[in-house]
Length: 525
Image 1 (cartoon, rainbow, N blue to C red):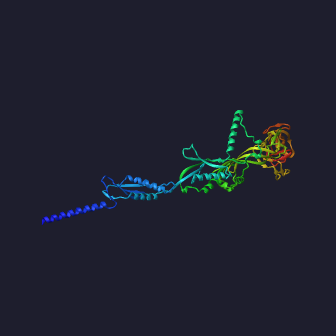
Image 2: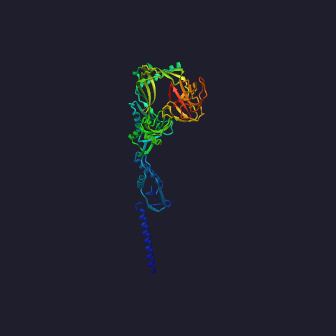
Image 3: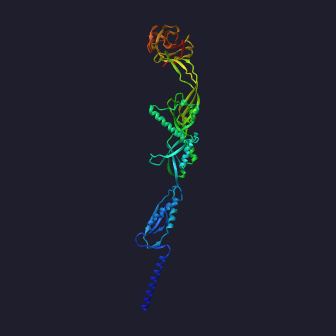
């Protein structure tokens, strides 16, 4: 009985072993499971940009597949593609396990990379005009924009824009210049030969041979634009940029070559007014007031002040030289005859002027629409201009000073209420109220022609001056000079008082020009 029980246990153990072996063999032959050698980490789980993309048993293939996935994603666009790439690999050691086919892992990597693609960047060109920058889609668009700036001034296809690499620059920089289009090779060859002959003759004679424009007829000149170039430094650099940073060609042309309001400084000149400046620059006065922090349009401006203004100018300026023919009325400079016996304020016209007429060919230089220079190439006078001839003195005229120190101006030149019985209601002098005894000085050097009592003037002094004027000093208390005496400017001639017809102590001061009283205040320094 005991022996039979032992056999039963033996059969059950054998069954278990067989069953376990069958299950093990079955697992080995299931699809996707691979036996692994126990050599350390032999199974690798892969994540790209936070997404599970599969499991591989060969770690060396993972990086190769990622690079292939990046190439595949980038090849789907003709432009430059930037993408986020963040891969993590976790390895473990197992006896057997399920792995993925490389094709499946590659496909999942591509999908994960596509989710991390930044904005696609395409090949473009950055155009720089001084400090102004604009981005265009191609070098052809750069050329078209620059050509539009040239054609704006009517080049008629005679001038074109060239873009050439600047060999002196470290990076690939395209420099722009305007060149003349000419199919007349013979003309160029003739010009070259002519220049060679002129240089040879110049070496023999030591003198340069000049073109005799005076001998050419006006019809022989080739009028029109002679040369063009960009005023600013213009460069273009290749770049890779997103579409959002590119400016469409038509919009770029408007931004670069059409006139924009540019800040500028205007220096106030003699005779300028705020309204005149506004008209000259075509800017509202209110705008000038606002830009310069003024209170209102009545603020005073002085010669030399610098005002912030705006002027219409394009970002890209074109300098051109245009040869023009025109007829103009012209004047010649005034001619002067110096007279050493006259004062400088004495002038007389000896000959009246007459305008002349001339025909001219000139090279006129413009920056955009503004003329900045003019060189006359040929001139022919049709009618000679006649100069205005003026005779003028060379002697500096004498000056006049206030004849008293201090004092209160109590009566000006002109109509007034008589201050005292018998006094004039039309005052032909000026009065300064001063205490009796105040020194009175000669306003200008001259000869005393009267000194003493003068009726209603009281004690008075008359002085005749070299320029023909006469000064009178009245109501003095005492006279200190004599008739015929020579006095200098600032010499003491009398003492103030209140003699004659007067309402109180003061100095009555007159000035006469050609025997007629004038306002002395107009002549005092």
